[in-house]
Length: 106
Image 1 (spheres, rainbow, N blue to C red):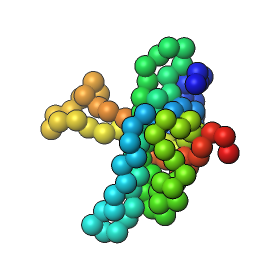
Image 2: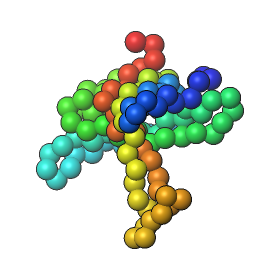
Image 3: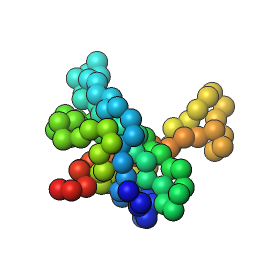
């Protein structure tokens, strides 16, 4: 699927892409369900893959609707992850904290 790439407004992101990783589902020691996938969403041949994380009951519900290779629509916000003890902006990674991850055909 060719997408137009992510759209970011303030700290709001919406993207169309394809799940390119196995679904990683776990429950934290505090009992919170967490779902993590990698979504490929680059535009015009651009290699852009973003980690997408969802927590709570919506993560449990999304897990049953999603599969690797599936085209999805994601809405959420960006979060910066620091890599290393003295991380600079160049060392930072980003992920999407999703409010929703839906199959594109729904």
